[in-house]
Length: 141
Image (cartoon, rainbow, N blue to C red; front, side):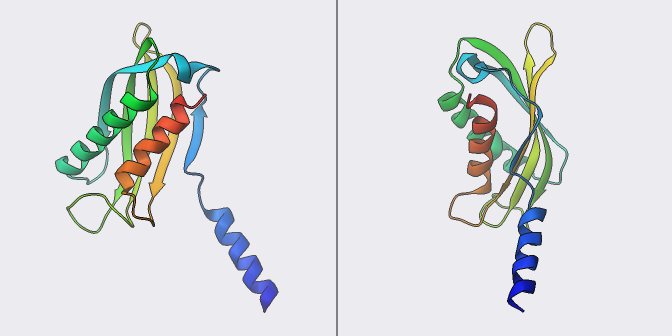
């Protein structure tokens, strides 16, 4: 019985997706050199305009803290999942997921791309956790 419980727990942990998965990893030292000129969010979910606005505000504030380098880039967020049971803010128990794509301003080529997910079970809001994960994934090196 104990062994079955351990196997079930191991299978459940293995099934949990990584909250940040690189699709195209940023070059070494990118994070120290980069800052964001423009942030665009494409909402591919049923999230309300107010929810997307809150996410934009949170990301903007977080990017001002973590993306402070001299070289400017565009950041496009494809919001692919915003699961909530209500029309209010995305908060505890909600899920936000999407692709964060960084584009070179001159060539319009993607420099880096990450799939980011935030699933909250703590007092932090899903929006805040998602914003922190975008900064950690793209600008941490």
